[in-house]
Image (cartoon, rainbow, N blue to C red):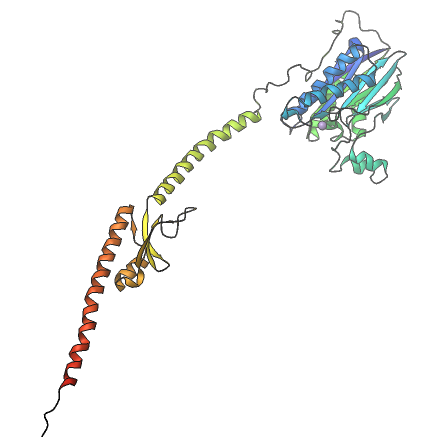
Length: 397
Ligand code: MN
């Protein structure tokens, strides 16, 4: 019995980054897919980190469940090393070839494993998702779940918590079986019937994987799509054909996944472009507000406050957020002013310096004093002159 593996991954038609990863290592009989989740490339880091740790653990001889638990630890530990990795996680669906032709399928999340045997296509894994729980409770049908708006909410993921519960399914492989591992980017786009039709039509695992990705893209490609197809055969490799490389590592499984791909604008570059516009606008706005503030603080006006002539700093009525403030109170009463001067003060005359305002008040005071000194004598002199005739006495006979 021999396994022939084909795999394909694609960013899809909507997303800018492929956060899925897959791993095919024929030397240790290991295949896996991971669908990462998390902000700003963290999902990509989560899925790659999980697969690297998984391979290291399986290579070291650990059982499948333990290897997935170690992958969980690796992603969780990595998530604590930087704010950008906070809360990241990944699905992980793994197949390992055990002794006696048994395939052990290990599984966490909402990626899936399927088996096509003797024309019958069935799912091997149970989704760890909110909608699957509703299906299990009998509150949703499988068809309703497939289009449910909450179908992408996972209830279990690798790397989110310090420990994780792993499902393991043993599958006794038969010659002619086909095992499919895929991310939800395939199953959200294609009904199970459509998927199994492609697998029946394309017997070559590599061509089947590519056809499935193409079909998902034709159906919309709203998510990253990753497919691993495993064919079970008893045929020996054809004579003369070059033997497969002992280790096949797929794209997405790279030790340093950080460099942005050319041609696709990275978020950092978008931020720079926005800053190039925002910074000059902020500078111009700052200068304008500074000029307004300068104008408002270098302006004075005279007005009445509680019946006294008062000097204000600022602009009458205020300017934007700059209310005028009292610069100087005087003891000059509005009632002491000549009526025309009082009216002038009520119109709040403005001055470009405190000195000019003071000079204006000095002129008001001078005219008020002059008015007072001329009225007082006239009222005091009237009384004697009118009283004089009453003192006249007529001569007696
Ligand atoms: Mn996905």
